[in-house]
View 1 (spheres, helix red, strand yellow):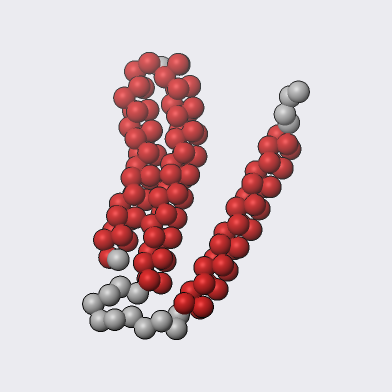
View 2: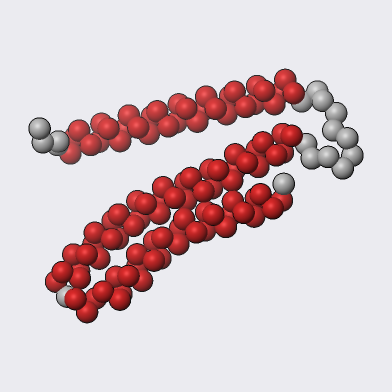
Length: 120
């Protein structure tokens, strides 16, 4: 069975829709739990658990979305680089630089996550 482009669009649409629904569900649940636990007093010198919770969530989102973006970028840049190297082998160094730049997106996400976790 050969998949058509419309099948891929349907799969991507369903996947993105599921991701959005689960993200909203997670945020609603976390906000509800935060409101229920918001009546606790925090002692001086302690970190508020809500701040820690949202900090970990922000770090996870930074790493996750950075990795997804890097994967998308490397897939398109890598395939184009392989095509260019097949036609002109002297383009290998330049193609490798472009793939490395695309991979840098994930590194930036990881750095942001480390900075967020350092502030908690």
